[in-house]
Length: 109
Image (cartoon, rainbow, N blue to C red):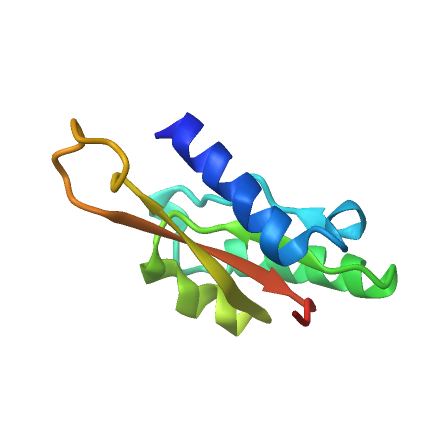
């Protein structure tokens, strides 16, 4: 799935973020140990990134691991700009379609 998501993420960036991508912060990975989830650690990190981006007049973006995370990102100022659908182009993939929302904070498209 890694190569598939990279290719499709590139298409999304080209279509939705390309004019601003060089001036945006990209959150590559945001994860919290399940033992510490729900304690505000991930939200604090997103808020710090958002504050830094705002101070510099930048936006930020990331690809979520699934739609179930979107409400969390929305709480921190991110909105869905596109979705990556994985598995649809792979006849050997047996687990159904996987949707990974691409979300951005501060970006108006």
